[in-house]
Image (tube, rainbow, N blue to C red; front, side):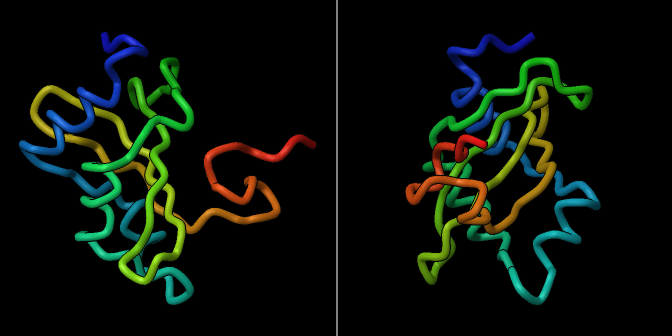
Length: 109
């Protein structure tokens, strides 16, 4: 079990071994209105900071990391570190209607 305090460390350690892109992530990344590259996902994972932590996720302890595409478009990555790989659950462009201007805090509803 991964502790909340070191989820980012676990993400980076797992990603250094291998990143497994789940089918949902591949579909989201390849949408014409997104076109998120593998290189851009890796950049988010390597530089990302914890925005949301999901310790009870059915897919295993996962988290949301913010970052930017090469063209400075904001990007969110949700991933779950495993022993031998990082499971990439999804990658998407955050909606400004749902997120604050810095894309790190959800808007209050």
